[in-house]
Length: 355
Image 1 (tube, one colour):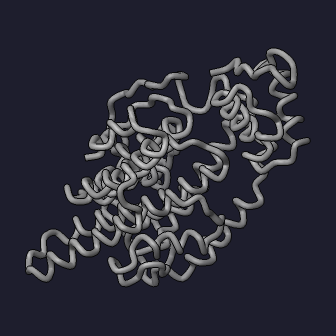
Image 2 (tube, one colour; image 1 turned 30 degrees about the horizontal axis):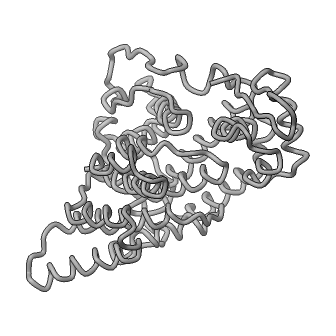
């Protein structure tokens, strides 16, 4: 169904393209729990993309649609109602630029997504859980003890706040971000809807760094994302099975760098034995030309790639960093031949020397 928006992405106006990408992501994330949205939601979303109705009107229509079904005793599929409702809510959250990095925000996203769907929306689970996983042959990841969830969340968020991304290169920064997202997912703070909440939070958090998210990764590979989180948090040393970030790294390589890593769920099964070749533009994720470039410098490169005439002041404004910090990082990028300046400071332009 996400193909329904491809035309807007290819040929639509910028605002239509942005909305279509958000809807693709919102609908694609339902695949995490094996849910499918209705044709009614698709058609309503198209009206929103075309600017005929607001996102609030979308939500009102979806709510009215299912109320009418229940009145007419045509109950339908409750999980389709969930998929439609949550998709519209994700679209609204991702259309909003506000964000606060905190456990409160993380919990609030769960509440916004699942109010009226789960009785425990926005509440930390108070019972222990296990989940039978296909890729683990029915076994389960060990999730956080219910009595320790809030303390563990607070600890992980505090550790992340203290991490200095400016002193690590781009590869290390992404690996650290991936580890943080994996860690908060493994806590499994919520009884249901944990992965969708984590995905939405992760998108908002990555955007706060200036990343442009490749919507196709979540739109088409959200179940892979969940399975990759499972493999990143499962150990069975007696059978020589160890937690690995390999699959998450491939997913985030596609998501953030536009790499072309092959994302196949069957490769993550613990009994998979076939040798799978690396299929990536750079022959592997996060390496190659970005070695030695820190996270801020990668964002500067992206901004210059998108707008070769961008000024230092504009870069500072868009990144939220002091002008002097931008100037120092631009100088370092010139020294390693990542960028160069053609022409004068006033009328010239930037040329990005790495792809």
